Image (cartoon, rainbow, N blue to C red):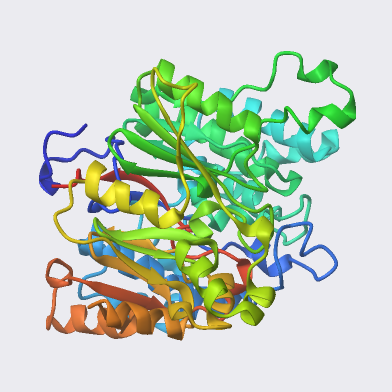
Length: 489
């Protein structure tokens, strides 16, 4: 645990996350790269996209606002009073490009492309990583030889986008790299690296592995980086049995909700074997004392647990009603509606394991029961727990807005979260719960004019334009890997 919350006292090498809502100090995010603009309809689903996106709109009108909001809250000197210059047409978005000399280059809002270019300066790391990538991607020897000649910044861009400086493609893109939550998760002062379930994410997992094991800002974590092992006999199992003992885990299924309590989702992307391994390792290392496993339906609709709930304040959660007690009560009141919205298989299974009592899990019937227990008992909240439901729990808006990430919010500081502007009914529900809602561009304009400061923003949902971002099936929570948060007071 950190012993101080003073922003000025924090060093650039600190890594510690003990909640979902403590003030965010350092985060890894990845701006949409050119690979997203090369997703074609015939390969979209193979690359885990539901649709193709318009890259320029996604960048200029949506994601760039996300970056500026994060910088204003985490590293304001990079943007304060400079936004009109940063976004001037003649500057061609150079501020947002990790390979460009005008890149914002913050040590608080960090792009993995920048970290990657740094480690590629080390010749030994460069040779090993290129060999690994080229083996996975089945490159020709000539291509591998050519890659070794590229400057580090160009090489890092190529390894992520799959495109050479002359615009020719040599790899498939890894468009999901914008969802940095899935590359790893910070659990107190440890880092848990993911093991992606889909082949399309293999390269990003490999790049992440090299970054965390080789970049100087993580050197002090040498013994605190956790990688999930496969079964020692996995390679001997028949193909049909390999899936049963396959170890796959993605960061969207892992939430650090209090210093001693971790949530893990058992989903289409995270396997039972991986969950079992993580529980054993974290208990053995005494990283946490309590782990709750939430088994969700293996459906594309849900994907990870952070697509069905996230936390905004100690006592406030946003969640999908159809997978909750509220959904079951709606079913009882309106049987015909329930036939369309809720199926018996869409019931959660929630088991809580405590270190030393692994064979005696505690069961929760409903998601609200678990979240209320976290708020009241783990976080010692004195206020009643409040649940904000996707689509304000109105049919059919709950499911519609959950699909466009109404439940997938990144909390920057307690009570201040980033959401998508398109989820009108959910925003209405937040307003009914006492929150204000403001567009990201409007808030930035107020910051620039000095009418309000980030420190003064409270109980607010910041609305990010999302026409293109929502096509990628991930919200602000997915698009962030927090490295450092203040402890909750």
